Image 1: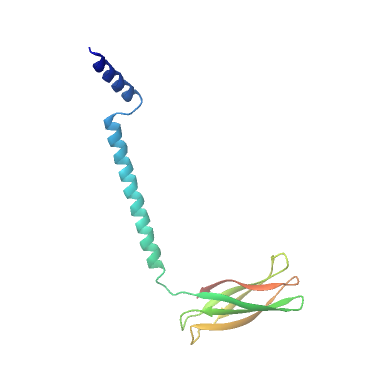
Image 2 (image 1 turned 30 degrees about the horizontal axis):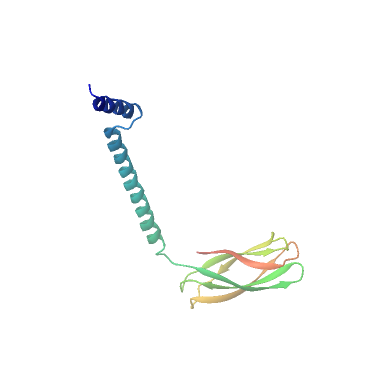
Length: 140
């Protein structure tokens, strides 16, 4: 046996011992390709689903301001933009100086003939409020 053949035999034995054979490389490459295709399918399905989900009616809110009414209430002024003819509900909150919620009110918004409409609602507070905000609105 020549020195070159001996060297090749040792290299092959070491490669087999540590899992660096050609068949292992092919198997790993196949696993990576299958995993990549699976990730691409999942991401594509999510993008399509999320895009179709946004096709429904939309609702936008904007806090316009608030007026503190003594130590027990705040008037919350806000605008609501929603499709004409839809109704909604909004959760309004009063907050104290620590920004803890001290008052809460659910307001029913009737259908409107305009896309954007302004509202003002009084929210009672258990402590002196420093602000009043929209928490969330949803279509009903």
